[in-house]
Length: 212
Image (cartoon, helix red, strand yellow):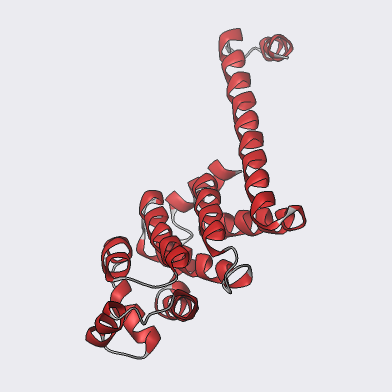
């Protein structure tokens, strides 16, 4: 294929070398193989988490989220798999997990968080799901360090002051299955609506191109 392309280019008088054509072909081939490997890994993970019937829907959700917000598709896939695995067997499994994931992703776009910062914020939420209760270490520390204002938003979502929320966490009274859906709604209310503008910066558009 590279030789045919080189012959065609030469016939048009362009000064491209066979080496350049081969290099371009190799890059495209690698990108296709990487994309296929990623899709296979995602499919296997979701088949084990929620069954083969849900894979198509989940893959479309991840693609749609990455596309609309201009996020890295690989990173979004990895983070969503972890979150879905953590919510398995809880009342948060399924639609509520998608809502929580979308809310945090929108906030990350609005605040211009990096892929690693976004992944760290979602990892903190995954830990809350797994443990069943919300601790100060996860909310103030892991999540708050990556998502500015998270603790204050959390308090407002629960209808209490920050000091009251702190006492509730110390007593183990903040239950993840109750807290996280409220937190997601509050994030969307305060930060998520601005994500539409933030999702159309040059960097986000370049990320969309990279995803494709």
